[in-house]
Image (cartoon, rainbow, N blue to C red; front, side, top):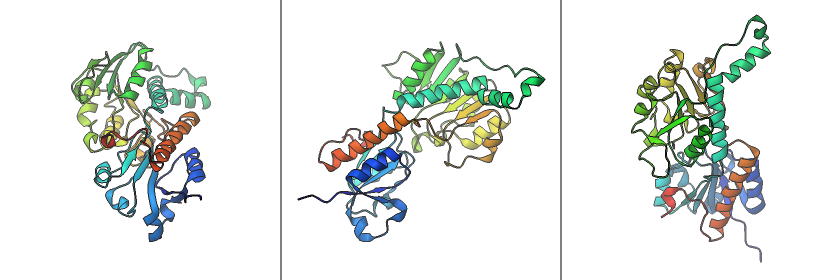
Length: 314
């Protein structure tokens, strides 16, 4: 006798690799198409990408909900406290995207320091015929500050070390497993460095952590790179700092209200913008999809999940 397949709801955009894997094993519903109360009552799991928004009210629509599987390392859009209160397991996909995020961070550092997008435009527009491109900034040997020194932060620092950068960091507490110099606050760190990279989790605890005070400390020769969450940076303060040349420039892969990027940012020539692509390679999205699916398979099969979010590990 064949058991009925478990029913899941996809709550936000997910990689096609994950969708195809889900469809092979589960009855899949999409968030905007599910209305039938009987179906809602049968759903055992929700699946979403890192930008998924799942609050207590949405969870309440699913009386049989047991699990939320996120395909992404960040899960600040999930009300984990509400999930735990109901005994709902929440998982994510850490580690498999560390290299890609670190690679993009270095790419953005190079892009803003050496003005690579502007140089490309300069060449395509034949502006070279009228004279040489402007001089830029050297990355090798520069002072790098890291706001966050978790697994991705350490991967970025490892790459930066190959550029002989002088690396220091700030986080909630000093780490005993790294040799980089610890600085107590983002403001103090920003005042000491040429480049400030943001790679700390999003959520209420870090909202607007990088504020006008930090940007002022970074100064007119300093560059900001954000590959964390848009909410970590006070976006209005950043726009003002870029417009008034209070900082030299920025490289941004994340924004407050994605995919809406403020027109003020899009008009500036001292910022490099990418559409939240830090983990966006074929190889990594396949690995993330496989892990998200493996977590779901383990849970529905009565086995321990592979990568619960920290709050659900106990």
